[in-house]
Image (cartoon, rainbow, N blue to C red):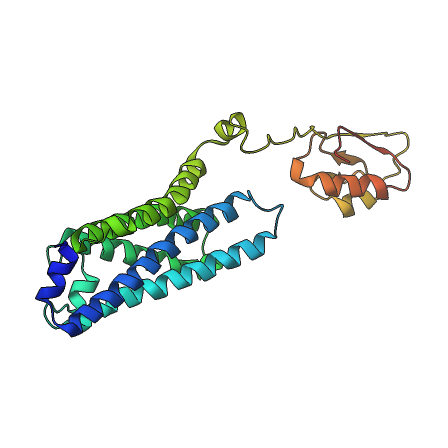
Length: 266
């Protein structure tokens, strides 16, 4: 007799139905969190941007994350309705409250995912770097939940049933997570991404004989061109790359065509 059949003989028919609902919601959560991680990595890395827009990718990531939270919440709440082995809210909210490792891992992982989801709504009000660093805790959170799922499958006797599907679904997020943390140079050498195009350094030269100090260039790129108190034009010979569009606009707007750009990206 399998462990699952033995457990069913020791529980009431009511608890057997609750256990089935918990198992179904748990499996849905497992699959959804794997797909959520895959979708998030692909969206963040831009590896499928050629097929669809980035906004659509992020929207899909949010939808999958919301469905994962919904099924995970349902999985936890089902245990409140057990008769033979009743759970309380403390068991679902406090890791290691009941002393069971698999429950503790699930509680900790789920609460971390909830925290990440809540802070995602506050992204615009926080610094991008801090938010991204906190969002990366999703990787260990999903790891905790995956271990919780496998320990639960072992305990309930369903490991042989879900082994093939579970390990198949888990492989893509693990591979993508490893690729996500590898340095860009390693991905380029492996041929997974194209090398960044070389950016030429923009150099600015002004023909003093043609310049009449009208100040049009200063209006277009004030960070690069400035008219001094004596009316002479002062300018940065090697402006920052982010200012290239403004410098090109200033060169086009100059009525005397006194500005010459060397190495500008057309």
